[in-house]
Image (cartoon, rainbow, N blue to C red):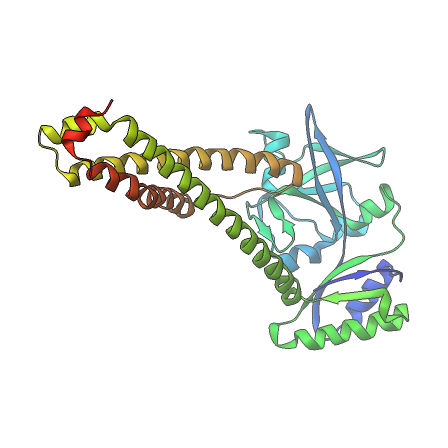
Length: 331
């Protein structure tokens, strides 16, 4: 579960007290997130970092590919260490082993050297968190050495099991109200509520994108039909010659259907390539790593071919029904 304060103040001591009192919670972690520039040698990447404690790792079930995770000693000592995502490791270090190397975090005209102690497994996104493109730092390190944080304005907590989620929320509600004295100064969100919000937004985007795609297919299909009609007109004499030497109506019709399908599949290939290029390009700016599914790519080619067949039917029928005598006289 996640909680953000709006106006009230919580401290690390409050978080520790909450952990001691909790009956339905197993992990509670303060969290501060921001964007920063990370540099190693001549390589620089602008990405999100999270200042947190070891419980954060447990809540999100993160695993390392090499090295270790942030531990209690890092948190208690405010040590200058970092655990980085797989994409960050690739961008900063390439083929070089990141473990033990020093990266520098630049934010608000300040910089903080950090020793890389772990690299996370390639995971993708979990809720709002793109694990591959993020850096984790002990909360106390950022608090003491970089931003001088004196309050906690966001934290995450994990219920003991799915059966006590509501009790855990009530427990948080009671504790926060006892500390902040104002129910409008905080908000508690469960994972289900976050997922519902994400699904609603995603559903609306899918409807909008689906409508745009439908209109694009219709316009593109009409364009293909017009191109094929022009092709039939320009090749009328060719059609007459083919019919004169024995080509049947079905032969002519099949020829034009194949041509229209090849045209749309070729356009589909160009579209897929451009989509991949632009997705990767935009992903670098918004800190999102795009993933492409082979089945979806194949489906796009199938749809492209079907569009060619559907909108090529009328031109193909028109070509197949041409009278060979009239077609041969056509200039």
